[in-house]
Length: 356
Image (cartoon, rainbow, N blue to C red; front, side, top):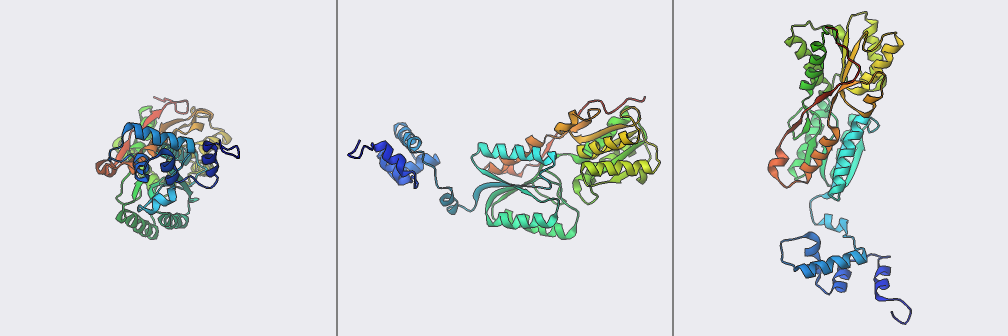
């Protein structure tokens, strides 16, 4: 306690009103700045356990926080991961974002979540901004667009990141070779079609996402392959395309019904489309699954609360996002270069009937 009634500890706490520096920690602990740096960065240079504990105690007492901006100037990137999504209001991307942000937080790094609004120009602009911020890695949450100008620009961005040691991981097909963590979309499209066929359905319609997205294309191809495998006819009239929203599923189901084609089952490219289709069928006086069976892909939380509860394929969105972060943070080159396919399983509920 000094003449002004302030003890030494309060002096140091008061100093944090400006900013406690590494020099302050070193002075308080009675060690060199180099020693403090070695403790903070957990380097291989020898520091006795007694000294390490003393430094860590002072760091805690002073509530010292390393200057992240200064650290980033000494390396080629910031400790930030960016997740680029198509529509953050969509629960599909929300689950991805949860896996990415919660896992990144465990590493003590920030996450930027960039919402493109399904606009490719917005996505390219985000890439430019992320390049300026020197992010450590980028995770692409949505499937790529089969648009030549977009693909050329995206490929240029990917090459620039990789040439400078930044990591990029995709959670959906992009239309060109890159590292990924995702499901087998074609196989999953085949899985849901096979599920209906195994229960006696031979007239099966399909509601797809946009024709120019690789994820929607692959899932639809799986449907076509399954029909061919079972020697069932393919008919373009059995296909309707939409924008991956509830409204899109509703409108697509009505298009199919307006064609006056007969089908006992319908595969939906994702849960949003199925939710919209369920409403359309109800309004048109069709009971699910008695009149038409519905199956989809995603297993989002609302699949449990539709009427009836939706039979759908579980996509491990949280786990995919978490794994992508682990890959970006890993120094293991072999793990980084690995392309990972997560398995999918069907969550059986009450929207599919057996008509055998």
